[in-house]
Length: 148
Length: 125
Image (cartoon, rainbow over all chains, first blue to last red; front, top):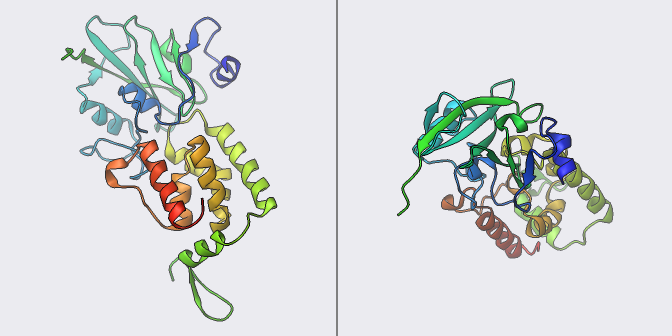
């Protein structure tokens, strides 16, 4: 699987990423970024995917920003690690259509769910960028929720 | 005329419901099974890493599977039950139905259960 992933994402270098889950069709990258492993998130026609009910179902970066706004995220200047903050990245293709999301881990590295395949941890957020997912269009951040 | 309604040679209107009932009574054609498996593999290989249902649906192999029509329903439902692959738009496109409750949108397990139950009710599983 490591090799298959590297064939898809040429920027991922040996030793700079690892597979961290089994394949799971129940959730996708956006759900994973939102910490939801029960649903497939996308602003597609209902009922094929979940999208926050108050946000328009439109395949645009602004719709993704609004969706994560419902979770307390707001635009960030960069993906640099900030203590006490959680960050996510929205990727888009050259035609400005969102393709992927990644979530920052507490150590500053990133985690991505690859469609219906596995989750991976990758050192560089741009490791999954390139031909398949395009480039990062926006970083979002929120204060780490206080545990109940 | 609705897309899901055709006129038979005798002028009788045949709805998708009738076609689905016909499928339930037939054995699965081996050629259809091979075609489905090849198309499903092509689609799955090319799109497994993608999250957009819109991209999944637009893939040419997926569209060709939809084009196979009601006879492919038992194969799709079997694959859905076994693999959980994203067959929901294809099932809706072929049947014109949506058995998934609004509050289950995106919940793959509940969506799968709803379609498997629908298949059972139509004797397709």
